[in-house]
Image (cartoon, rainbow, N blue to C red; front, top):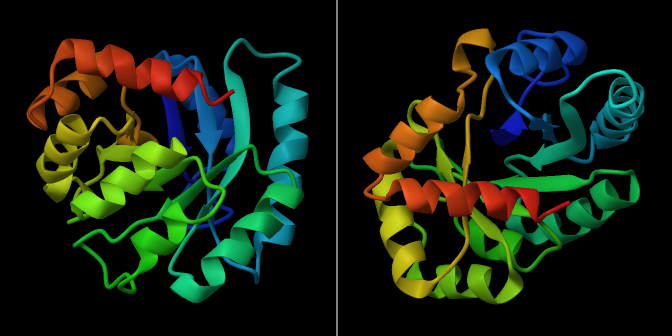
Length: 211
């Protein structure tokens, strides 16, 4: 199981990164991305520390740790430059906090994110067909979310992505131990979005192909 979206105490998670990784490993995950919430006020603090820890852990544990960031509630006009800075700081997985209907994300965030050098658009809410086409063209994965609130539009995202041919990924968006999901749980969430077991397998391949 690959899960590229989770949070530690460097943002609003409850675990230090090493414990988060250990709990994910115990849950049966093989690859995880630590993607704390970030903007230009903190990414220069978060990313190098997560990258250094990932380098240490990847030498001694079986699970693979990918250092990343989730660009969150950044005004759309600033997303492009914020993503560039995050990449230069060593973020190997860059997620943008999409226009979930559970939070007051600024309109235009999805579109601005899809114009930037990102890997995943998280919980994109009521994303438009035009934006899904752009995601397909740029090879940006759209997230099916296991997180309460963000998951409310999973069916909409799945239906548009399937009809247009855009890539999907399943992530936990974990903030605490109970949020972590294993492969069986992830597959059930995918099926709940109107997709199939085969779609889940493809989504895991999509995640693996990012690295």
